[in-house]
Length: 342
Image 1 (cartoon, one colour):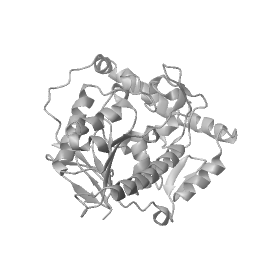
Image 2 (cartoon, rainbow, N blue to C red):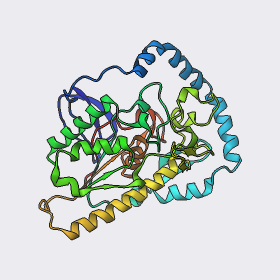
Image 3 (cartoon, rainbow, N blue to C red):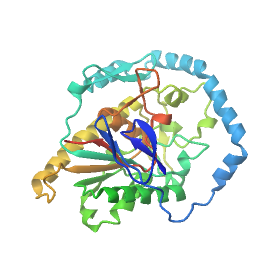
Image 4 (tube, rainbow, N blue to C red):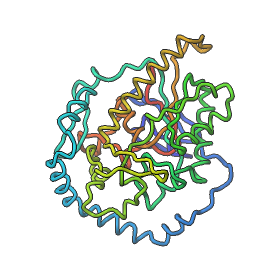
């Protein structure tokens, strides 16, 4: 049996493949492919050896939450970001932004403002990488060797392809993030289907959140009072560093916070709607009795943003605001229906 995510909301234990429905969201997962057991990496060996030390370090960071909140308050007061503009932009999406805490919640008018998509949408996060193996790093808009799929991730990509094959879907559009961990996850499926190769497009706009100077830095190595920790400890959607990320080739990538990512992914959904409309009118669809289907291969934070925008956001336990990191993210390489047009 494998874990199955239902509409990105809760976890069940189910055998083989199962497609379930919950509040208009669907998901599926296949058993892991039997294509050879991945070997233990050096990083995993070190992690096992230093298990207790790492957990102690994470506990120290968590205990510094009050200091992080003080630093965040000072950061907000410094006008490092335009909170008024971000509040207005999130309101336009049917979301409510609580600036003092950095929290996001669905506003009362969300349903009225939510995009009405005329196509089915499947989202699939990339397979596992060294970057999201302990000790974990901020893994955003980075594409260095450690950010590629590891052996487990490659097997997971094949399992995700198995899952889509079980559904017997025929995507009208397959969109890949330009970052290799996501594109390779998607290509595991595309390589099985020559008939889909002309339906594949790479969209830079669908890439992962830009974490600036935090990118590819281990969480444990960042200062205890750094506001970066509020991102995952407190689901703070506003924090971001002032310093950009500089790629090995010298390319500079400015940082963005989760609210800015939400706005970007809203643009991706609009682009998807336009592209699907073009495709639907430019050719006769052999499966015209069903709505068009778009499959988007991406990332954890980008996926969380699309989940929220399609009405599948998850509230933090016992709270009214939304979670997007930690236990609230999509699992690796699990195709999820985030929207059904019917």
